[in-house]
Length: 140
Image (cartoon, rainbow, N blue to C red; front, side, top):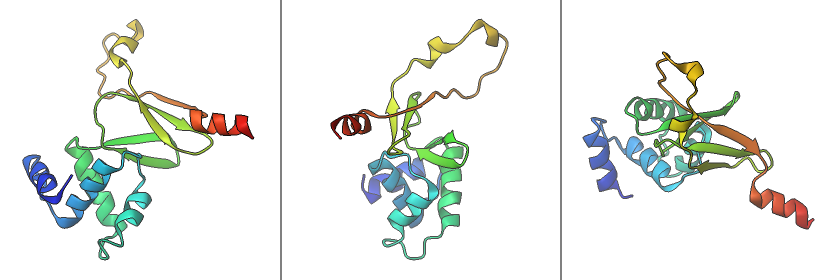
């Protein structure tokens, strides 16, 4: 995604397209790795020497509030961000730490036990060993 498209997109969502916000949005759009604040900061600090972690935090809050980004919290000690805001699940590899998206039909996961509840958010997380790590351990 380039600056002009990102700028126009952020503007269309009523987000002031500052240089830092544009670059953070482009990073998320081009890197579907579910990054942490630190990862975003370190990826962009060389390009934006004045960038602070506070700016990244504040930008992510704005993006979440405007439904451009989804918060992913698989571990209690780790907050990650996902540019894909469509309904899907996450798998975290306990060996390499990567997080993978997978399709899921969350609408069919409702149960009668939740009748009358007003559900605002649905999340599915799995943990285990990914194919790559599993295959690597089998070849060693």
